Image (cartoon, rainbow, N blue to C red; front, side):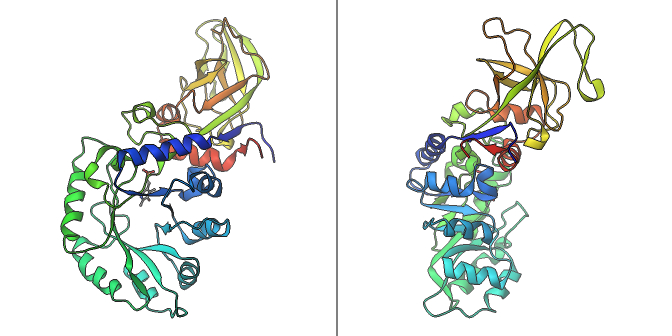
Length: 364
Ligand SMILES: *Cc1c(COP(=O)(O)O)cnc(C)c1O
């Protein structure tokens, strides 16, 4: 199926953004987070683009890691949710995936399997310092580290201690500082590499850089902070979402637009219908006033988002009047996805994942 809305991925932007992560954390190795199909950008494609400049990749689950290995990606791959079954363990050993172990069930699965000689597990040990999503309680860290270090099938030189921030995107929230202190305390006697920082940690909490950083959203050119813009961090948009104008209407004062007639023209207006809607990953909750870029300027969405269409204001385009067949940019280099996300009361992560997975890719 080929719909009109298209995403384009920008390889140089992805590479630039990873380099920005390295500049921010020059002493750390980089595990580029490409889970969820690289936030919609295409996992294999993104891994290929970043292959020369990343030290490794991180994904959520074993099938995501396997897809990368089968595509020939031979850098270290970390599986952030770890194994869920004995099958996952066998695949991890065969393909040398680093599994993040975060609960007792995973420990017991590790004891149920006998690997072929030569095979071993590379592991991460996830400590819950406050997120309460995944991880062992801090007081268990040393015991579990010792247990796994001495485990016959675990490579003792390939253990990494990990934790994850809950509030790093809020610069003034001191939860991150507390999490850093908790992690430093539990790791005091553990001589293993450490990994803490997501994008917000990389850009804001230097103490979180440690041995391996885990940049996700910043690679795709979105700021991890609600109160700042990608330009402040020298990031570039890695995805553009484009769609064509398929109709133009001249409306009079009082005419309404779209479902629920939620928008009424306050004056005579020219409007354009764009072939992109929530079926293409454009957020249905985007409000009237959400920015859209077309013919060299920003304008706004009017009325509700439909399944495959939106309507935008093209009244004030004296120099470059908008015509059927012109292309609108819903987000990309000229219009930050963060702004669109804000107008839809969501985050760029969600928009990128949805559009990436629903839209046709240009060039394919
Ligand atoms: C998704 C994820 C990241 C990346 O987070 P961003 O906010 O996208 O930088 C890092 N670490 C873990 C454990 C994650 O799940």
